[in-house]
Length: 428
Image (cartoon, rainbow, N blue to C red; front, side, top):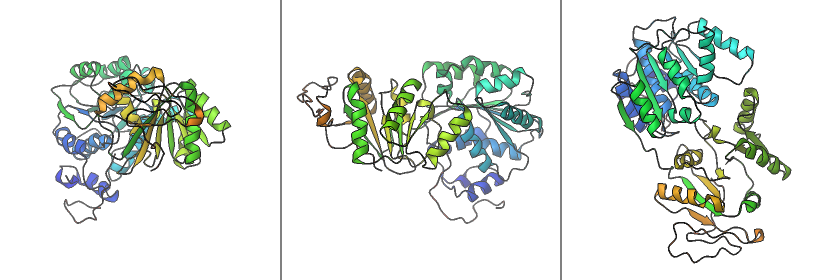
C-alpha cells in the first residue's frame, strides 16, 4: 500500500516524500487506519517491521490537523532503553519536519545533570511529545517538572521488554496520572500472559494487529557449532582467521561475560567494543558511534542492543550463548539481513545449551545447519536432543545431521497523489 492511500496529513506526507518513503510495511498498513480512527491498538510485531512509523505517523497527523493544546504535552511514548528512546526521537525529527507546532523531547537516564536540565527546559518550552524511559520520567514527575493532564496519546513500545526489565509498577504509576479519555497504543514483540493482562488493564476495546512475529528474515543464513564451553573462543578465532570480522555483533548472556569476551578478543588483536548496562550514557553513545562508523569491527553486547537499534549493515550475528527465549533468538539474529540484504547468524551451543537450542529449532520449524568444529580444537560433543537415529560421534569434527562447511560471516506541498519517484525504502 502507498502512504498516499492513507488519510495522513499533507505535512506528514511531504516529510515522507522528502525521505523517499512510498510503500507501507504490513504493520503500517494495518495499524495506521485504526489509530487514525481513534481506536486503542495492540500491535504484535518484531524489530525491523516498521512499527515506529506505524504509531508516529498517525499521531503526528492527528496533532497536525486536530484541536490539541499547543503548549502542553499531548503524547507520551514509553521505551525500555535509552537507545530505543533516542531512535524514536530521531525518527520523530524526520516525520515532523513540516509540523511547526509539534516538538518532542527524549527523556532517559544514565547521563549527567546537564542533560537532566535540558529535559526540564524541553517540558517548560511546550514539547508536544515526550519519549521516555519509565524510570527517568518518574524522576521528573516526582519533582513536579511535567504536567500530564492534557495527554491524548499514550504509547508503550516494546512493552514485553519493559515488563521483563521490571518497569511494570512504573508504567502503572505513569498511567494513573494520565486522563482517562485518551488513546492508548501498545506494541510488543511477544504476547505472554503478562502483556495480555496489561492490555486488559490500560486499553479499551483495542484493535489487535499481529504481523509475522516469529520468523527470521529469509536472508539470514543460520548455522551452529555443537561444542564444549572451552572450545568457544577457539571457534571464534578460527572464524575470524578464515574471514576477518568487519560488521559483527556477538551476543552474550550477561554483562560479566561481555566484559570477559571483549578483553579476550582484544588480546587476540581484534578491534572490539563492549556494550552493557554498567556503561555511562556518554560511554554507550561513544561505543555505538565507533561501531556505526566502523572504527570498531566487533561489538560484544548483552541483549540491550538486540532490539531497537537501527544498524542496517551487520554481516554476522554470533550467539556466544543460546538465549533461553526463542523470541530473543529471533530478535538477536534480526540485527543482520535487514532491508533485503543477506547475513550470517552463528550460535555456539555447549552441552548445557542443547535443550534450549533444540527448542529454538522446534520454534522455527526447521533444523539449523551444524558446522564441524575445527579438528585442532579436539573432540566435540554429540548433539543428543531431537535425534532418533543419531550416528555422528563428533570426534574432532562436531558432526551431526545437517553438518556442513557453512558458518562464515558474509554478507513539498499539499496535494495528495502528486508525482513522485518510486523508491523501495520504508520508514522504521
